[in-house]
Amino acid sequence: MPETITLHQFPRPKMVANLGFFCMKVEVFMRITSIPYQIEEIFNPANAPKRKLPYITHQGQKIPDSSHIIEYLTSYFSITLNDHLNQEQLAIGHAVKIMLEERLRWCIVYSRWLDKRYSPSFQNIFLDLLPFPIRIIYPLLATKTKK
Image (cartoon, rainbow, N blue to C red; front, top):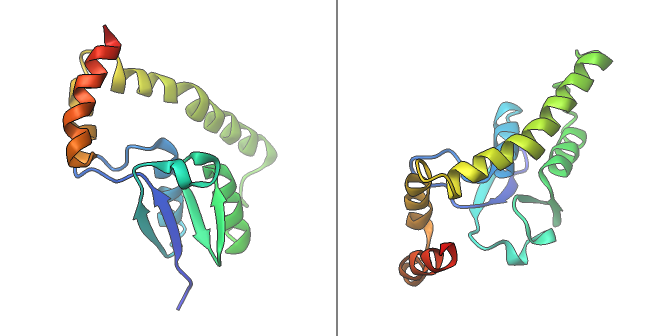
């Protein structure tokens, strides 16, 4: 039986595939490549390596950062997803990856938290994930800081 990787990521709400961009990136990679994994949901990444999610645990190692995780898994499992691509195609893929991770992400963050047309829906999804006392306190604090 193949070894199972533990993917530590944010809780997944019922209506959204994943709230974390980079968590989704790793999970989709693991699904595409059929790497067996289990999910441990963590709301507060304070104890995570680099204090960020996602990270994986494999053979007692904690590997943080979505790009490092994918590099590690590609090497460890001898994955050949990109072997058929030439140098130009790899470069274009890298450029698109950087654009999505470093630029488009901020547009999504803006629409989730600041754009009054969309933020109420997202914040309701987010609030449903919070434990009871924080679920009540968070909206009060958020409205105070926006004034």
